[in-house]
Length: 354
Image 1 (spheres, rainbow, N blue to C red):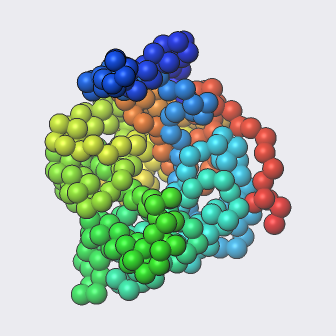
Image 2: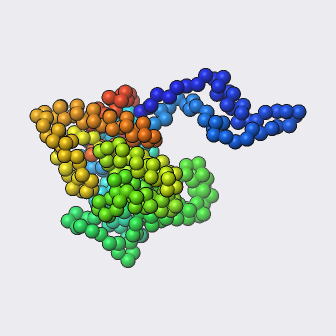
């Protein structure tokens, strides 16, 4: 997905490069003082500068395997930058998550992001999982506290557990450092493909934790200091919520990228379930509009238009890209992207050859 950026003439680029290199005077190199203008060289790469990613959930039973990988194959046709794989509420579906991530590493050209949660895991289990993922080639994690197990309102870590996403970041970084210290090959691999850790951000505050947007900025600062590389937001329904949060975060000293997470609005029942799970209210007008359509095709068309408008708005506000929550459904997100000019490209998929 891309936002049109005017390409400057080659002469302008060459001139800017010459400025970066300095000028020669009487056989001495006179370095031009640093300025923002020097680094404002236009982007000249031929790939799309706006990041695109998806979240998928590992199939919970064998009968869902084939449809799941068909969905992944459809999503890959729009060339996402990465695909994150959830870990399951309360730490469930851990073996399925590992198998899914391993296959994405082995059989696809994209970088998977392995979700990792504190809930339902001891420190030893987390360390074992991190080692397993690193051994398989994973280089990016999403460090999360996690949702309480089903039927429980709250969760407290056990004496041998990991208490927070911040502690989880420290733990992942410690495992990576110990691997690098133990073998020079691991250190070289880490230098070639640095480990990155994503974290969650809550632009409207986190209802489950009872926090405000200002408090969530403080939490994000702590995660950044712990070693977070970038953040992915919880869903929201108004671009201003995202824009104001990012502005507040930048003023507070958050410099890592903050990627907006967006959920297609095509199924009112799903939106209500997500509302119950996250505590983030869905605008009643949005729900009533969807409920007013008699046919799913009408809801799909509305959801695509609503989603594309929301994405345009956050990109105009400076978002580095978008992360789309798929719920393992390709059509809603692909419909949104189609309205934005992003179309699938044919490719040979080893996923469906198995």
